[in-house]
Amino acid sequence: MLNFPTSLKSLKLQTRHHIVLAILLIIYIFVNIPIPNSIASLVDTSVGKIVIAMIVVAIFHVNPVIGILSFVAAYQLISRSGVSTGSFAINNYLPSESSKAIEFSNYNNFPTTLEEEMVKKMAPMVIDDNNLNLDYKPVLDGLHDAAPIDYEGVV
Image (cartoon, rainbow, N blue to C red; front, side, top):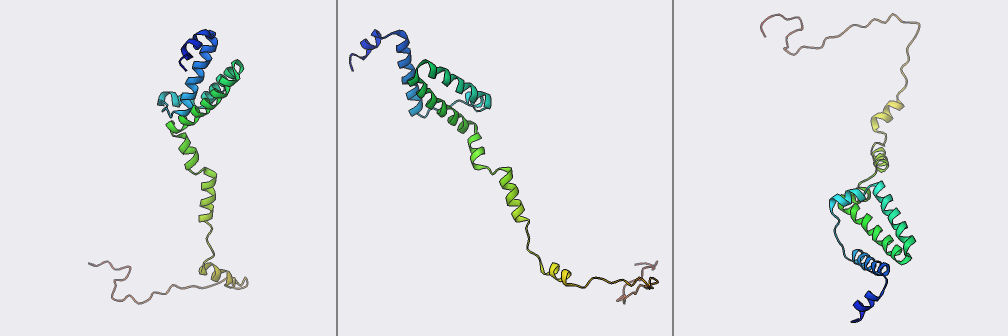
């Protein structure tokens, strides 16, 4: 372990960069580092996720081990940015429009009431076509000490 700095100096520059990148990716994966809102809002879009995926594919072509680590780190970045912006909670905890429509349709299915049953049981109204000269007269019930309709006096 004491020879680690001297052995790191003997490696090529590119290999040293890969080791440093691997260490940084491992630290990012295992430590819950919060994502700033400005970066999270960029990553939590369709274009941001596509750009992150393209970067992972490019890194995977350079070094497969670093590519696997970058894939896991990219997954962590996307999930942490979803939590940071709140889209994770919206997607997982709010009901969708289709589920709300199903619930509302269940609420609107009322059983038939007694009134509806009685109206269905009633005999249909029969109108005699021969006798169309029907004579209806209005009937005024007792006023019970109320003023008549055409009363113009002091109330």
